[in-house]
Image 1 (cartoon, rainbow over the protein chains, first blue to last red):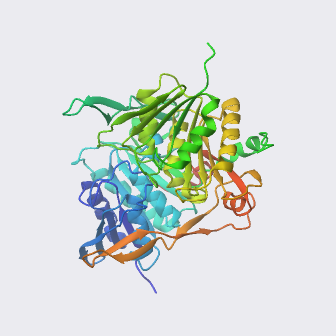
Image 2 (image 1 turned 135 degrees about the vertical axis):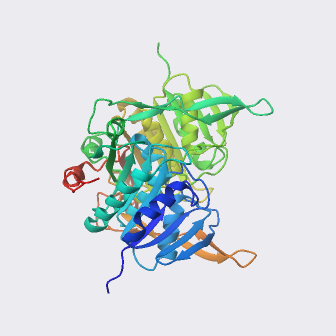
Image 3 (image 1 turned 180 degrees about the vertical axis):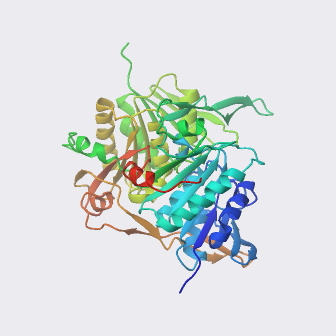
Length: 256
Length: 256
């Protein structure tokens, strides 16, 4: 049996976003493509799952080698539903995005785009999340699309080790090349804008700036992006801090 | 100045859950306690953030050394709002939970309880997520409360390394002791129950079983729980797969 590679496509900006259209075009001729995406915007959903809401799925479109489903759940719900109930074989690749906006540094933990890629990885499917550092709805994905296509095709050939997926961020504008990097250490600061609602009550809106704690580290994803390179971070789903285990074992837990 | 330790308490089951009441009691006399918790159930919210919804905060209760706020956001929203806008000094400890239900193994990535603990860690606050392997609303937290109090007090004294927090799971029933463990490798399977809504349309409800890929590993959190021990996993917020970087750098990215 010589079947085409099966490619699952999802995102967190919803099935109508320009980013997922670009991603679908980018991988379209690499195999049989199934798009399974949220029915609207689900940014910042991380690895959230719908534990008590019923999920609904709609078959949106069917063409040769392309099927598009939409779902009322989170990005991770989409991946779980697709892999549990809607695909008849294990995909050769999962791609998520292309996100409108960066998911570099600590943003990997909040990102719905990366939530979906991490979930693909949980299912042992080679998985990549793609983000463009331009959050506008009409962002120009032309260059990102090329990188996406090449990386997708490499990962279909090479695979990825169990428990590791890729977080790919691409700068807006011209791109000098690709750097393999680490997740930049840092955090968001000044995260809320306080204003009043119509009744004069306080409301808080998310905003903020990323504070980079290692600006000079040229192996970090933020450095790569600031210097015109696409950044590829390999992401582990086992979050155990192995290096700290020996020290923790020395703590005195007597009497507990 | 000799101020009491400041302790931030949150959860994902909402401020009215029995688990957070037990947690608050457990740490109450260790310092000044601020509870900042979701106004209702937010299970499975991972590190989700509200990127486009306004957040509202309500001062629910004020007593000596105890202030309780509720918020309409996710667990991570609660931690971010508390630390950005509602506390006047950096807490000495963040505790999240006590969750009604296990967050061992891969569940760490879906857990709102752990999302909050991870967020505390982003803010460089020593942070611990606590979960009891009993999801019933009236679960018996008496033993967990003791472990919680002792661990909280150790962490206030010892601190935790930057970028590392703790995921603590406690078995239901009698507990033999505490084991320092790794995050068990495995995944959830058979994750949906398909049924019909009132109009005869398919709906999918989350369900499933955890498939343990390393049942014999007596260093894993699932092993500890299955054998009557509380499991403490140190969790890293830098998800970079450092071991895979050299191999990834050998991939041929020419032409990208």
